[in-house]
Image (spheres, rainbow, N blue to C red):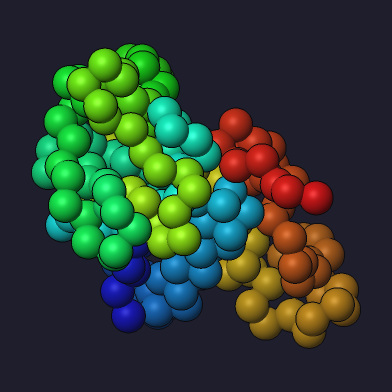
Length: 209
């Protein structure tokens, strides 16, 4: 199989596990472990770190007349923001970046790692631009490449740790201790490895209790 939207490569996981590049016996199992670990990371963080290959359209209910929280927007290239003025399901008014609205966080592009934009903020209030929070339908349509500009190093390392654990535990019986090399007990776990979880802490969206 091929790894789709994984947070590390086959070469990286083999290097992490000290498996020679010419040893291909477990390549399929390794790729599956990477894919599974990557999706575990998505679920844990409440977001995903791979970038859309092409622009996609998503629709949102704004918080108020000036603010709309959106999914991670990775780049302004291809970005289109339109609003439904009369709640008929047609997004007839296109807003212009830096004229009608800005993207927040303001300094997302200067962060290390570079972070995505997560909010639209109306700035042209005198010109009549606004969102409509009272609409029955989603008022804002955003066409963009969603995700992150690049996979952060912390996420790659967390994926390597988690994928290694999944690979080693794949032969274990769920909930039962198994002994691997050097008598180290392995156990299938429903949650992320604690070290992987710590690496991801800064990237996880707040959870609603």
